[in-house]
Amino acid sequence: MRQLFVLLLCVGALAMAADSPSDSPEVTANKRLALAQQDRERISSLVETGALPRVRLDQAELDVADAQDDVILARTLYGEIPAGEVNDKLIDDMVAAAQRRVERQQQRVDQARKLVADGVAAESYVTPFEDELTMRRTNLQLAHSRAHVMGELATLARFEKSQQEIQAITKLDFHDSFTKGMEHFEGPANFEEARDLKPLELAFEKKFDRALPISADGETDLHRAMGFDHSGRVDVALAPNDPEGVWLRHYLRVRGIPYYAFTRAIRGKATSAHIHIGPGSTRLHNSD
Image (cartoon, rainbow, N blue to C red; front, side):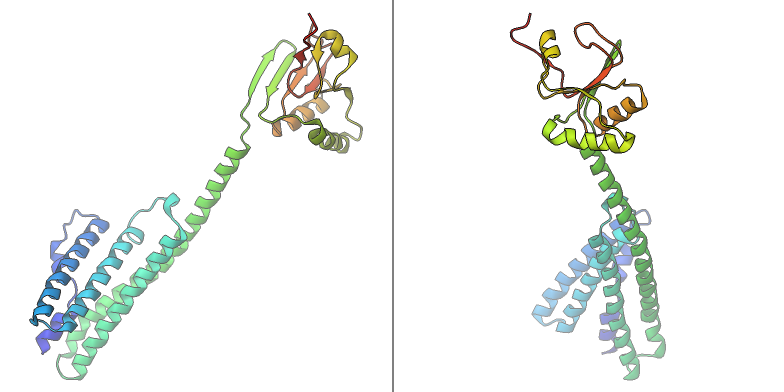
């Protein structure tokens, strides 16, 4: 009887013997799990033939469950996890696995103490089971501590990811071109006067306490005379390098709105310094 209970309470002796000093915690844990599963299959066969009592199979199931939780801890508590892979489920799994191992070992300690109380085993028989319980409780405390650190890492990783996503979404995909007296910003957005002009006028007036100096709103006689279709475009009489012009160019860039900034008159393109908002004017079909 005493030998049977000793057999029931012993944990992982064969698994410990199979460990290699060079194995990582996760590899070692997986080896122990494989051995526990093999042992359970062997014991299951013996129980079916009546060679072992049913309680022995129950203990083998507990050993397998212990080994499964050990695999979880080997990866989460003892292993190195990239910050990007840390998540709430992984943290919860780690703490839960450590908690289950404590509870199972407490069962073993209770069984060992009962043997002592019944006079089946000596007082010293309980010591190794209590030592194991102490170690598992320590691991549970470590799991809680690491859960706190991993939670902060997960929060940081989510923040960094959100920042990257924001940058990707708001990144301006454009091409700048420069010629003498002209800067061209090819923003990714479309300039829609009905939507974009009024907010710009209000922002400019609030910033500089005067109205936006629009010199051409859509089609004009001057543009027709130059052979350009200026519909849907707006010209602003601001020198691009003056403070107001710098502000306007920055405003348009942030919103991805294309523009041409002329610092002087350019034959066939501009009669004076100004900022042209919108895509370049197209040539009229009837102009030569």
